[in-house]
Length: 149
Image 1: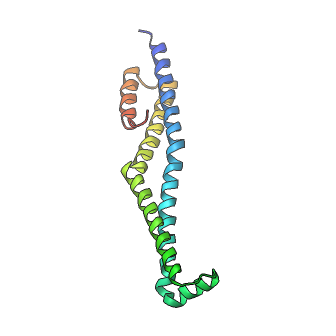
Image 2 (image 1 turned 180 degrees about the vertical axis):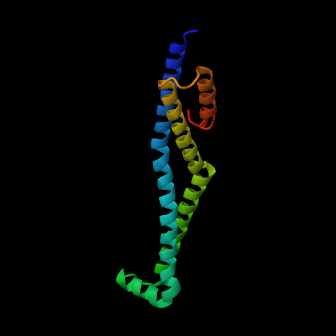
Image 3 (image 1 turned 30 degrees about the vertical axis):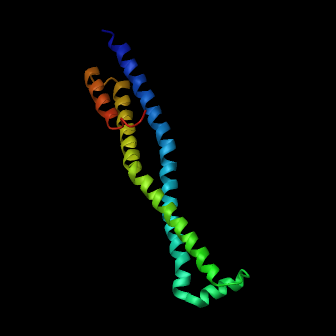
């Protein structure tokens, strides 16, 4: 058995898997950030939209109606309610998408797998690990990130 050739093949396989993980992380991290920002900002804007009429009541709506030259203060309530509803739905959808796909846990698993594979590559490079152990460890590590193509 050509141990050196097999070791090189395993090293290349690990390298390919690490590239796949890095590609996944380049897509998943910004997506997670966008979902989080959408959820947090949307919820904050909804709170701000509803605070004005809640605290200022008719004086607030009349002032906003005058500011935008609206004929009727009730239009202010209608616009605020529609905007609040739309932003609430967007925030709920963003939160649901982040939680349903378990994005944060998958990113953490991918990062951990990448670090383990990097350590395995280092051990292989310097020959401090029997090939059979390296193959077993490789299989164990990649199973943690099986969701990555």
